[in-house]
Image 1 (cartoon, helix red, strand yellow):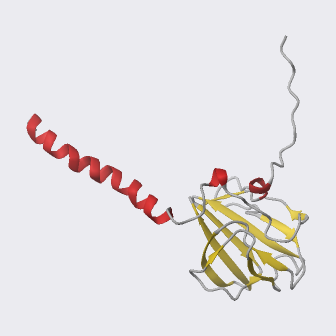
Image 2 (image 1 turned 180 degrees about the vertical axis):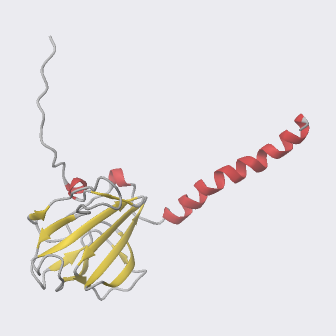
Image 3 (image 1 turned 135 degrees about the vertical axis):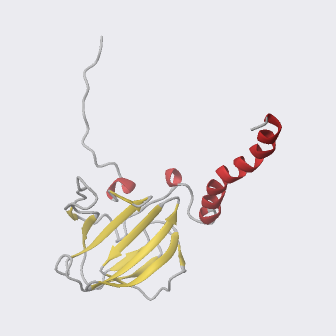
Length: 173
């Protein structure tokens, strides 16, 4: 190809290459603040007891626990763990589920949670989402809180506090 033709094609190639980046920015521009500055909170009042911790599966399809089970009773109020838009409210298998898209690749799912809010509603961090409902997930004694980042499940508790154990390192003289 002649150098002059290549120079004419270069702007078109740049536009095509950068277009997906611009498209993603448009879809998230009105969402929550960037994750690093986000103010995450527990979806229940206070600091609930974790009944079952996050257990990342070795492979996407293998067994694990893709969230945390938080101690709760039927009728307890459930709040938004961060600002976002409700993208799903309905029944999955045998329990009511609410999903919030927080932007920047973060999505929260909470179950069993009954909500009167409609899909598309905006919620602020700490705003009432609904109440703990009946569901077979943990025999009516908890809610399951799952968080995905760009489609991969992460430990939601780490958004609230760093739960890793402290490790003392030797001092180098």
